[in-house]
Image (cartoon, rainbow, N blue to C red; front, side, top):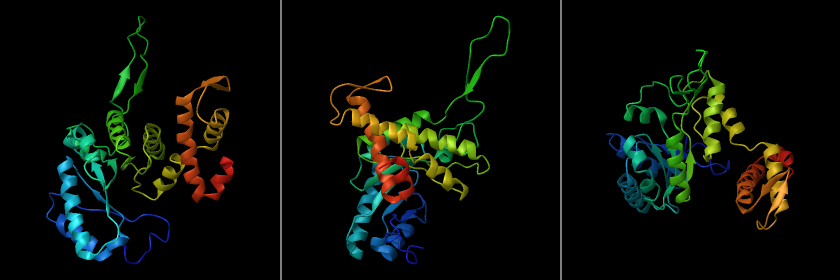
Length: 273
């Protein structure tokens, strides 16, 4: 695929996921990819990264192979967070090398590593809930399902942002449940993730929808910035106070909208950009 299709000409990066570092096929994966594809390869996804030492190894191996094959640009690394040890070391992983592109969550392997009692690949679980206090009349108690991955998302996003990397959600395994997939992607989007894996063609449209800001949200953000053009002072928009913090929040949305608009004329028009 890397030889037959020009990903750069199509305006997208070419990524490849390799076998884990403890796999007997790992070294062949890396040497073959770099030797055969060279500068066509943009990012290598490294599964089950447990600490900065794994990234140090990949950094040095790629440096040798790049020199051997005369590459003109460095190949970047995207770590997959799939073990409890990896989560514990996520900040050190994020800062382990200038090659680091980002980190994504691998929920199935991480669940197994943590000994979590679920066979689901991402998403919630009906048994992971909070329950309201008991009622005096023994009426049914209110209950709400919780997010199994909230803590991990927060740690991963913070580590990535601290080092200027891109945090991403990983796979959602239930192809038949589009609504649950969309909600899991939206949780990741709201927490600061910039994208997600799609395991099935039906999930591509869901990911595009979720990680593309809504026009109304963008228009509000544009009004907020217009009310405080230089980001200083205090203003009111729709009866809500704005200050430098809310200005920065609005700028996050507008900056993302501008990236989308640069590649999607329809969304550019919808945003009014």
